[in-house]
Amino acid sequence: MSESIIAKREGRTARLRLNRPKALHALDLDMVQAMTRALLEWQRDPEVKLILIDHAEGRGFCAGGDVVTIARSSQGHGEAGRAFFFHEYRLNHLMYTYPKRGVVFMDGITMGGGVGISCPCKYRIATERTVFAMPETGIGLFPDVGGGRYLSRLRGRIAQFLALTGARLDGAECLALGLATHYIPSERLEEVKRKLIEVPEHVEAILRAASVEPPPARIVGNYQIIDRCFASDRLEDILDCLDADGSDWAAKELATLRTKSPTACKVSLRLLVESPLQFHFLDEMRLEYGIVVRMFRHPDFIEGVRALLIDKDNAPRWNPATPEGVTDAMIDRIFEPLPPAEAWTPLETQ
Ligand code: QUE
Image (cartoon, rainbow, N blue to C red; front, side, top):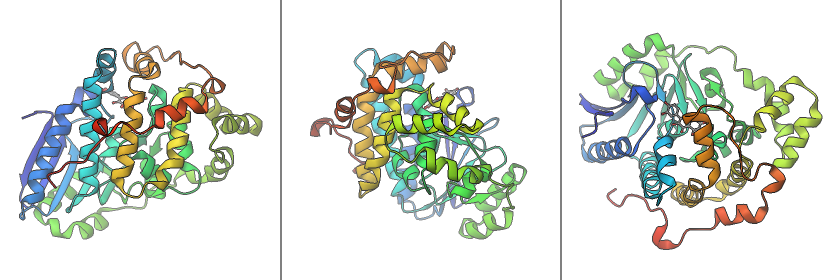
């Protein structure tokens, strides 16, 4: 049993605590499998009324997936990458279709894989420490773990903005966008968790009573410019619009976008066109898995992880280096369905 997940029944509440503090609780394959095993057991247990998800002592909540290990192994046969994403997406799908209510405490950094285990929960708690982002285009990936679905359901063109720039949202912004359901000061969380464990049936009343009015959500003031500059599904149009805008905001976002992988940006834009056409979450996961199998062996992923997480020089050399260098045919190939024998499938034991 993995120590990096603490899975424990506490009365009629079942608790999953992420416990890999030295990697900001980033998910590795062991953690994904430990969470899956626990959830499958609790699904069958009529005594379990509520799932509580949080992180153990120290900074949280979950920085993403264990991309350093995957990037290192992807230069070989790539089996470790395939296995990780396959099982991570199975966990995401299990949570999305789970028959019991979940409460997640996004009390700190909640990025990538952390978003994938938060968004399926019915109750999503933001605090003054929440930092929510899908930053994958910075390492040559795209907003996966269901990101295509969660982002594309947000208002206006927020999805394109968040997916391309990897912009960080605070707790108040998460609440305004509906990514969080409650805003609770972090100093109240211990008491809230204690009450949830005491009377899980009262989850809604407990969360409502502990919620406070958040500070103003800054992103609301940028809705108009986001909708205008990110209106197109073509990366080149978005860059042109930001360039022509002339505002400080647009200049800053343009500079950010230029640091991202052009291939990953185009893949993300295409995903946000395709995701709303996916009927079931299962279809979304199958689509994303096909893409990620191509992307985690693309040189941009290995280079992005090197530049941002290993060498930390923040100077990735993308290939192709410019949006014009990434053709529609290249993106088409990344979106081709996998052969049936290699395709993603959900857990069968539900
Ligand atoms: C994009 C990502 C990740 C990221 C940075 C990105 C990601 C991830 C981490 C991360 C951060 C700190 C750690 C760690 C991992 O950073 O998925 O182990 O200590 O896990 O731009 O997708």
